[in-house]
Image (cartoon, rainbow over all chains, first blue to last red; front, side, top):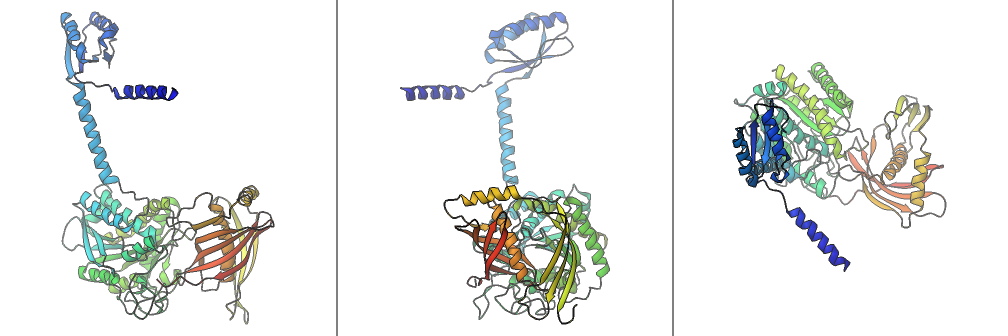
Length: 422
Length: 177
């Protein structure tokens, strides 16, 4: 029957494919010919097909050596031939299969290592657990530079992890970077993670980052609001606030960027728990905010406070709670413009620079207002891509370009901080 | 400021085609926000200096595709959580953009800044006439308050007759979660 024929054909093919060539016992010889006579003898050898010789370098001139692979059962014959004519040779490879096996092993090992270290795709959005796993991975891969600290717990008891980039010293002046304070702003957590990898891998290669880390530390909090972040994955992609319960209300959560002790409760924040900009019952009521505040205060030597948001493409300095300029307005504005210029240099993305109040709206209880009034002069808030076409739902293929351009802005600011201690 | 009337803005802008960034058209506009009554949409007058791209072919292809569907089309979450819009859903995304522009205009004041955040649901409503009808539930993001506002809109479209929003209403936020 035809199906029987098919089975026969398939099994024949199958059989052939299983009959893999092996090179057990094959040797590779290098033959040094001294004259044309000897070359001719080798060309004679070449013509003996039954020997199944595989010339890697064919006999042509006495100026060049001849390399030949010889199957196991031809070795005796070939060596006898060469010796009878006094032709010199040396053994390049004793057993080819052994060499091939080792090479295969090495390749598998490297692939495994590669799989182990590069499996994380920075160009896609990840759930919280994956992000946390990658933080650990960065620590183990760059252990001499990166360590992980837990600065507190979220409302729902998730750890708040900060990566510390340090080349040593004791309580060096440091730069603080955070992302994901508003959980729906997914490109910020994703960019922060990319940035962590960038800092770690550029140390020792990029002169700027290397000199910076030789003097200063960097602290990076990739997910300031993990409860909210999880909620955007499980339930509501547009969730912004924390997930704390509000007494006397069915509505959940506080806007963590209205909860800082800077003009708290003033204009631009709501006292309605159901509002997206609800400031909370009192400043620092949110454990996520309090944890950062405590960390910064206890550290005592933070020189810059940089926070990532999306979207709108803005680079802002204080104040938000009032519309008057900060004392360092001129310097911050100039630095902001320089950073925006660096950002634009990569993909043409334009960022608008200004104080929060004059650029977007008056908003009280914001993080960079608090950090600035606390004494951290270089306080900036970034609003990353885009300007509304996708808004919070920024396609994943824009994560890396966003992170890359933002990095140039962050670097510009960090370099200035490094060169202008205060 | 215009005494007793409201506040007028004179704008010079450049329109850029979302689907072809090198295609731009200059535009001048005047926007008048009325004093007092916030329930009246701002007056808008505008002049385009040049022509918008002709999309007749793509419009007709889309029109015929939908007209020939046996079952009414239903789709959700455009873009999805990760910003993906499948190519066959893109026209619905663009149509929602245009229609939401009308809704946004009708509900704007000097203290609002709306963006279309997402299409939660779009359902085709079969019609016996030549128009295509879609029932959209969209999410508008209001920048100043940071609120996400669900909005329902009924959208009519025909390649030659353009877009109409025949009905729209603000929806209550889901159960406070």
